[in-house]
Length: 491
Image 1 (tube, rainbow, N blue to C red):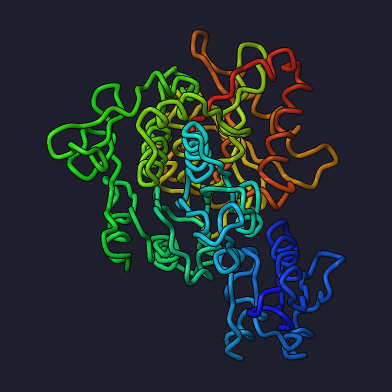
Image 2 (image 1 turned 45 degrees about the vertical axis):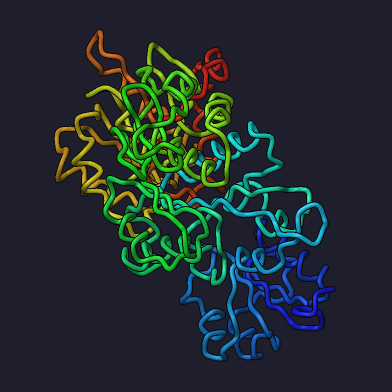
């Protein structure tokens, strides 16, 4: 039992993976748990209005899912009643247990956020920590819920991916080291403004103990570091694709180097690895994309802040393999490559994906839930890559209008959802027809990089990517699918 929760009523809102984990951990600590979810049949309460009218079931605490915006009536009612609202991440921080079951300290957290690159960076970090012999796990917004990892005494250090949603209701976390990779417009429908979104990202730096890691070329992430209230002795470490200054990690020719933590950093840079150690992450052109290098440098800085040696950074980066739905070639049909980057769920990610290809070589499959985003900057920056565009999803209008303004000569086909044949089957068939018009000698790629969330038509970005691959197989591309080496062309 835990005296802080024993006998108290805790309302858990949202019964996704993290919500179920939070409810389990709270019950284990003696709390009376009431669950709310408008769609989950097993929830104790499904009617928000009834829950509010009933005084939130007498809750002493609300632990909320990232799926509920702060404006949701249940959370608004909690604020009005001065009932504390925690994220599952805040709960995890509160219930941490000592490592190895002893009376010592809990496992430190190395935390990562950003509009894009979080999952790749946390995966790289996990690989580096494992290369150093640490008992670790990538948790949080990817993989195991952080609240379950926090109560596992066998873990020595956690690599924690955090979304802006999770950070919004996190109040006391003090990461050993934290990174903000980038900030670009996303989830503005949830946060209300870009400024509020960035501020929630910046919460990851609060109370940081050893290092705050940021993109030295990005004034937004640098500003978040400067504004953070950190522990005495915590340092700011920037990552750069150029030669690093003191207090940075960066790149000298083809060598990743450290001048943020190295003992002789004022006069020398310590080698961390080379581009050859990241060869498995090369894009379609055989070159490691710039955003992948930034992810690797951020992961290296976080691991170094934890005390990992440079040799383990190299070994961990060599061992890292990218996840599914990140620039994976799923087949070839009639000389055209079909590439799944369904994880590109916002404009910033789709821009990085398109940048990995040659000019005038891409038939772009895009669209879904725009989340309040605009696409003018994306189309303006990447119109030179486009040979044609196929639009899917409920929010086609913002993409259509951006293409009309900035790429009026690029042919566009829109695929409605209302027909009997699956939407992705029709989208891939439309893309095939656009690709067939490419002049001889020009390598063409059909690229699924939607720049939007998937939940309007698919259960997840993974389901969307799987549907794309299945449609390609139906065209006759199955002989190539699965034999291509996955290539990470975006965060």
